[in-house]
Image (cartoon, rainbow over all chains, first blue to last red; front, side):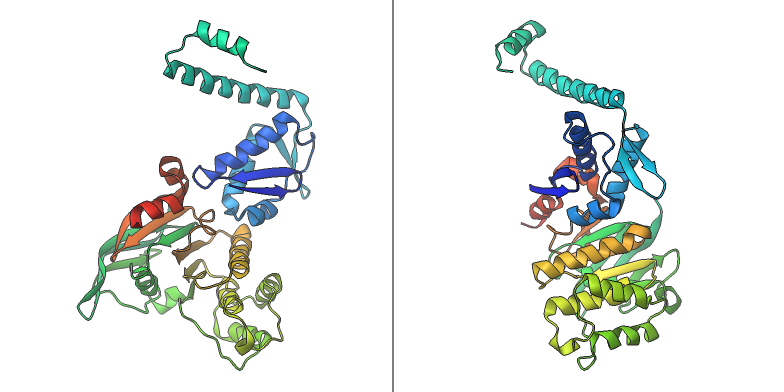
Amino acid sequence: MVKYQVGDFTFELDHSEPLYEQILDQIRHAIARGDVQLGTKLPSVRDLAQQLKLNPSTVMKAYQELERTELSETRKGQGTYITNSEDKVLEVKKTLAQSAVHAFTSSMKDLGINRKIAKELLEEVDW
Amino acid sequence: METALKFRNITKTYDNKSALDNLSCEFPEGKVSGLLGPNGAGKSTLLKMIVGLVKPDSGEILIWGKPPAISVNAHIAYLPDRGNWYDFQIVKNALTYASNIFPSFDIKKARELCESMHLDPEAKIASLSRGQQACLNLIFCLARDAKMILLDEPFSGIDLISRERIIHGIIDTIIDNRKTIIISTHEIYESESLFESVVFMDNGNTILTGEVETLRSQEGSLETVYRRLFR
């Protein structure tokens, strides 16, 4: 996997997974973790496509999804910016955490581990 | 999904050797498609048929619903797998010459592409490296305001930096205008993130076609799929 630094964002692309989802996920995570400040400008579609050698439509699709979920906003003639709303960021963080929990519970179920034991395991683990 | 290009039951034989064997496939409008497969799979023959350089023995080709014709070619920019420009010209003059012979050739765009690909306008064609030649040939295609662009092996035998410049040129071209682009190649690693749809060919026929992002989620990278199909 190759790492790319584009503006304030870091990307890592794996050709064996859908690229659109990776772009979207990595921007979402950067926002949720606070790696990028609120109101930061997103790289232009051209810059991101050129540096990651992506089809511009893949980048546009990811940007549209960010905008649809109000994580970003486009200012006419200026570009696209990350939201300024801390509530929005909290919301995303929660959504990402929930999907992580879902992934965790399904692997536990897969192993035949019930809620009680899983809780005990969680208590034991280094946090 | 709109279809730009349809091949139906295409057969072509050269001196008893089958090049295409009852092939049928489609290419979507306004997307970048990869035409992938080993040497001799029939990729070049397929591309040549679109612009009428090769005629099928049987079968039907439809480009935006029409059979291949000169009038259709006006909207298609085709990069042959083996192309050479006039050795005696310098780059600058080659661009002017191209603007006189190619339909809808945007010389301003050609000059911009030259600059972004680091081609010296004063350089003699004969003095260009193979990679620089390839960039120049690509510019002749990309600077045309064509609805369809066919690139036959644009990366083969070309150094890494030139390959990257070619990819940049392609991205720059499609960023403002959606175009139907078909790129034949067996060098997948650098180009696979450009492809939206893909046709794998072997022995004169298609062996796998599909949307690239769907293939990725089901089978992994195009490189992996390619290895599985051709190893």
